[in-house]
Length: 327
Length: 261
Image (cartoon, rainbow over all chains, first blue to last red; front, side):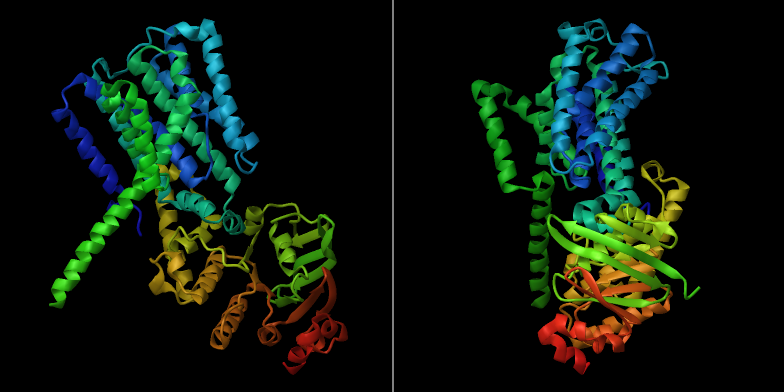
């Protein structure tokens, strides 16, 4: 039960090895590019998984926060020539303040009010990205966003950017693993288990809902920052409502009960459209069918599906062992 | 300190729609007492506990706990002042293990938040070690140490009751509200529960007990308060309550049982 228990970090260690080894086998730029997107979306989905799975709240406005992160950093670096690493805290700070304001005014309401409010906020920001032409470039887009560099090394290749993104993914998984296994994580799970009982033994559920909501917005903002400085160009269409739905799908399909659901969901929903690209008109239908099948058979998402599978395998081996020891 | 008033309820009223659930009820509780609240079903006993815990505010009246006015506070604030409770229908965190349930009980006495926990800062690690240690000690007090790592839903009914009490005690309360802790228990288990409640009192924790098991109530209470249709109809020592005509009337068919005890 002690902190620093190596079991907590097993997933992070496995992911570390996979993310270091993968580029040795994947030399294709197109594939590295897909993996960068999986990383960016995983960071975003992680925040949403915490919000949905641990605080029990739904947000339909994550694309808005993603966009704020991207545009604030894009505008500050393009228009004011700021160093991206200075723009990053400002982007995250502004996004968090927006989320704090929304969360504070809506989270004490029960049910789907937060979903409705975030839906509205997401749409408002999408419109702002289009209409504030002076700042955002409007529908034409914001061009020439500078690439990132670390210690004088420009991250100008996909491979270099790949390592930055996945290092961040790992670091964030490490931090969130710590949160989930702490007093704070237990408090949040208690709220999920029985909110009234949690309140009566001293867990302030409103405070945690707001904090997790702000955290999810901050992670979306970080994803937006990475996107902006990877693609070097922003267009409002990437931050519209349909992306909020996509991000929510990632957390649900991946499974909300474990933070690893975010990785599975982001991976599946990023890979699927790429794999199905060859099927022309059928691809949307196949995409839909696969999602339905996943959710019908694994109603707890991929995490839940894997859980059942592992247990089945274990019980089969356990039975075998029992029989052989019996004879 | 033993005779100080720990809790004072002054002329509290609560209605739900047109129904008056609590009607001008006052009570005073001294430190170290076991005070039982009895009354027929629907008399307002659980409503009174909910008012004390801040689940909802009273329409009128004052509640003073340990010099603090608490009638407008939220449950988590009241918990931090030192009131804790159990529930009539068991309300464990079934998504957590037995020991984790008790560890959540330490939440209100600890402070580390997102930042210090995510970066494993020293103070967060020390605090976590203390939470773990405290929780195991508390769990041992109700005899559930061996079952600590199991999911809380794997416990038997009695064990779940005990875990709920252990979780409530983990918040270091000055006052614990027990809502029908003996409901559904057999005679041996009730005896054990009786001993546990007296042990809680012996540790200096004041107890409010809502209970239908009259033998238990008469056995261990210092004072009994009787509610009927939301009003206080009697208050006093067990012997006084047993012979109170109004109480006997309120209980109708159950009067024989009361008198026999």
